[in-house]
Length: 299
Image (cartoon, rainbow, N blue to C red; front, side, top):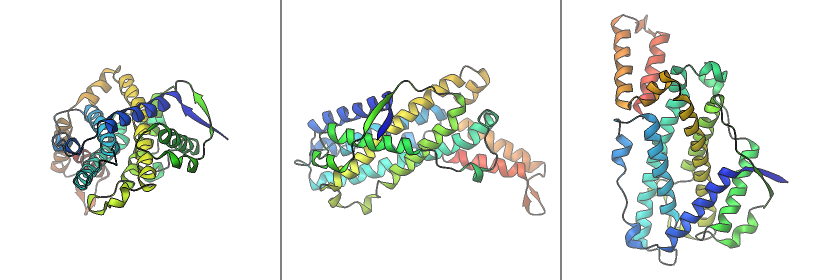
């Protein structure tokens, strides 16, 4: 059976393995315990959504690689405590990225009037679906095999447990505006899978560092990270395309703090006009604006 996999995705997968090997080769418990504070970027609102997401994706990429690219022969108990703190940081970034994606999938797409282009349903319940196809899941499986083969921190003895399929390299993938929702949906699924594979620090056991558990665990996280990077690159190209339109460029460039002020101001106007409550039932327009405010709060 043949697996279709994009050349760009495969190259990102290989790059991740090379970065991991370099970090693992220079591993020291002392350096591993030095963890960057991420609270400033998580709480930053004086930047645009696009820029914040780019920063968080890059932070997540390097934090994931640095966290799991270890030398188990040198790895100490103190380093394991650092790993648990790193897990906490990774989970926080994922949570913020999921909030950003929710905003982009709902409020952002609607405000840019992209719904008609994509043929989207106005009903959020109807729109909920799985975006990752069977072929894409098989590509993830092949990527996992490739990573075990190339990443030094992963146990090569487990290669036999990952069924090797013949691959067919696909050329450059054409990305169009109508693909925006699908790409965001796939990213959200990937983030959800990543979060599920990262236990809260209190639940993390030293047994995770033992083989074959460690390789099975880390290869999944690495594979999901490289896939997320590939999807985000496609999303970035769509943002670049949207910016060719001056109206869209203005909306995309707005700072998060400005978006919040706009939402709250409109909400205040609606309340002042008495649209807010009608026999204790929330008006549809107010309900929509409340949703927009809630979606923006988590950014």
